[in-house]
Amino acid sequence: MYAVVKTGGKQYRVTPGQVVQVEKLDGDAGDAVEFSEVLAIVKEGELVVGNPCIENAKVAGEIVTQKRDKKILVFKSKRRKGYRKMRGHRQFVTDVKIGEITA
Image 1 (cartoon, rainbow, N blue to C red):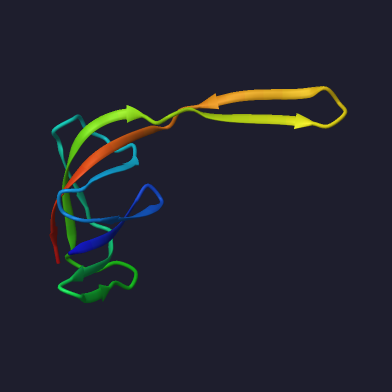
Image 2: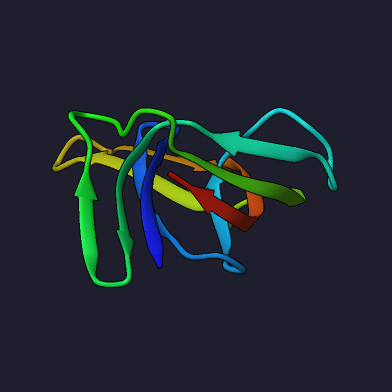
């Protein structure tokens, strides 16, 4: 059994017991979270697809950690002009352990 949920502008395929790294969610480690935007559920080989979301479907989870992702370097340059700029960025992310999928 798995579900496709939408959070932070992205879609994630989740299964019970899986730890997923998503965009930052409010809360501390140990807090419960609930994803109500469930786009699809596959249960025992049967696919249920929402339009765009499945009504009364939820995915429950628990926040494991709040952290920052690895650094991404952004380098800009213009040829023959001597213009070079380098910036770094670290995105805030949340690790969520998926619990129960209900439809």
